[in-house]
Image (cartoon, rainbow, N blue to C red; front, side, top):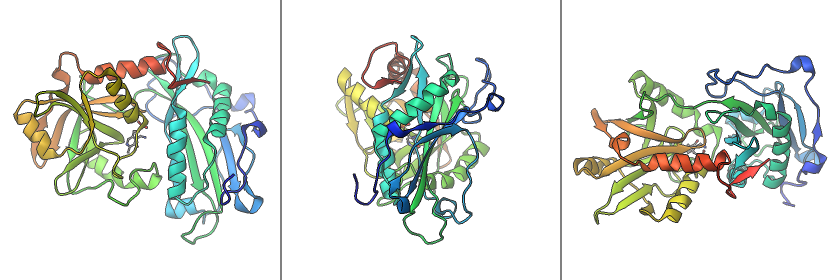
Length: 373
Ligand code: PMP
């Protein structure tokens, strides 16, 4: 019981209002192009917070419906908003699993704190979410090529214009069947625009939290990349042009270090990096494998150019829930085209990582990270 937040909600008081048969949406066909986040399931989860009523209210599952809010609602003015991205996977045994949901809850509560929004008990939320998933379970695609994307969202809805903590909030979740997130070329690799005149995150900022306000300013840069025929943005930071993230993914590099050892490196959680759950999982797996050195350290565009010149850069890839792993084959940087040999390796690490994570997610191997609903 957090003094400031007041009462917490409990999954045991969850109420369910089912959609009427005529409200049910047709489910997509197995070979429909799902795209990302275009279709939604029949139900949603809602939990209101009202300070004046003592804190969190009873959770409810309702048909998917529009939200009604006052035009002064803080979310509409100061982007008092944060979200998560998770997935439900239908395993080879027909069971539905989610992946390390405790990590999403932890990250969501860190963002809530940063936004002056009320925190909540992640475990109770997961129980409510599992109920929502079981009600809409037929929406979890029956194929390994797709999954059901889960979007928990927390918004400040206080109908007052002051830039201050919101005394009312709504924690809700919608579900969307999805295929693959990124457009890639025929090899499956993506090309990147690396323009040091744009910055995604900075020390003391909130780039390490999954807040909507971090994403709006990236859209125009992504459009510029697309205009140049490039698929994603490589976010650089600082005078030394540090690589931080790619699109909405963390970044990893496999290279041969000065000592001639293979090393897998990703930038450290220094405040500029979203603490990705895929990132954390890859670090844990790679350290367990012990086949190469694993480091969390800064690397820069001059490092990339130097490694390329010496033939020591092996793989570069983005990682995230949406795509698991997204190999990178080209970077457009200060008028130069840098070709990255990610797809030319004989037994690429990024493939092994993708297979290992998907085997866990789709229940081909038993693993404590996969939670059956
Ligand atoms: N970086 C950013 C900026 C993101 O939005 C995401 C997606 N949540 C990630 C990295 C990857 O995080 P995760 O592995 O938890 O999906």
